[in-house]
Each structure stands twice: as structure tokens, then as C-alpha cells.
Length: 293
Image (cartoon, rainbow, N blue to C red; front, top):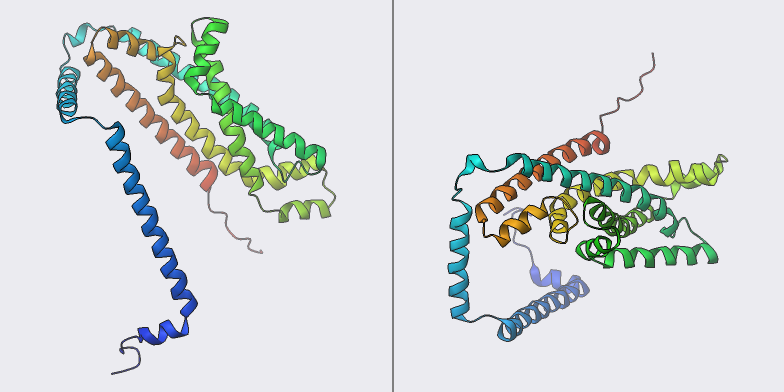
């Protein structure tokens, strides 16, 4: 038998790489203990907060009844489709205005929160304050912001736009700042060597590298807000959520399913558009190598 066909000597390998096998054993024990802790937590959780068999049976019966009502559309051709599509259009308008405004604000503030840009004692303190501001903004749910602005500016789309701006500014600002901090510093050093000022270094040395992250996060947030904006209508902030609230209160589950399907189609269209934009502006086209004439 040739050398390549011989069986490996596991015992010799263990003797030769003893520390590696010991580390592997510790890792496996750690994973086992972590898995056991997770299983015990689930057992404790369902023993304390679980539901009884009767509640489970009753709940399944209710769900089956609701599903039956959702897929049986009564008097379909007499539904107010113009009203439904108008509310979907209002929802999309709320999402685009709120997300685009939050994107611009978050991008500007993210440079003040990036620690590789804000160096020094005072700039570092400003970066810390900006990060705490982002924590406050994203720590409050969008529905809570909607309730606050409904009380402040009244019912309507404006409250929904302001709620999205507040939520997304905190979320995107923190993510953009982390994207700025993850860039390679070599282009910035090269720009410094050729005499570039601070604004030029931020533009060509930092933002050029973090732009793919910026675009991907912005596009995803538009998709996410399209789904989340339906909740804003429940609190009076306008949009398709108002139809949800009305028809759930009237037990018109067929209309609820129809609106849900429309939202799914809209989200799929948004995903297709964002995928094309990612390929266009993140992947880019192949640049041919220079060939001397």
C-alpha cells in the first residue's frame, strides 16, 4: 500500500498536536454545556408560561376558522379597490419620504459617531454622545413614536413619516458609523501623503469604501419599513394599517388576507428593485485592464 493510501495514525497525531486536541475538547464541552443550558431554559420557560392542551386545541380551531374566512372572498368584485390601492400608495409614500429623510440625517450624523473620524478628547466625547443619541432613537419602537407624533401633530401620514424618521435615524446612524469604522485606513494615509484635506479624506478614503454598506442597508430598510408601516395605521399614523384595523374589528378576514397579499407583492417588487440596484452600484461592471497601444 502506498503512502497516500495508508490509514492516518490518529494516536501519533494526538501526541504531536496535543494542545490542538485539548482545545478541541474544551470547545466541544463548551458547545455541549451551552446546548444543554438552552434546552433546560426552554423546558423551564414552557413549564412556567406554556399553554395547556385545551388552550392549544382551542387555538388551533380558531386559527383554522380564521384561515377559512381569509381564503373565501365574498362579493369580491364589489370591494372598494380604489380605496385599498390609495391607502397602499399612501403607505409607500410614507415609507419613501421617511426612509430617505432618515438616510440623509443618519449619514451626516454617522460621521460624528465614527471613532476613526472623531479622534481626540472632545471629538471622542461628541462621538460618545452621538452613539447614545442613536441608542435612544432606536430604543423606542416605531409604533411608540407613532403614538407620540399622533398626539403631537394629529392623525395622518405626517405622524407616520416622523415615526419612521426617528426610528431609522437611530438604527441607520449606528450601522453607518460602524461601516465607517470598518474601512481600511491605507487610502486615508495615501490621501494625507498627497496633501488632501479632511473633507477629501472622508469623501474619497472613507465614504468610498463604506458606500456599498450604506446602499445595502438603505435598500433593506426601505423593504423593512414597507412591512412595518402597516403597524403605524393601527395607531392613527395613516396608510394601509387603517384598513387592517377596520376590517379586523369587523371580522372581515377575507379583506385582511387580500391586503396582506398585496403587501407581499409590493415587498417582492421592492426586493427585485433593490437587488437590481445592488448589482448595478455594488457589484458593478468588470473594468478591463489597461492595454498599451
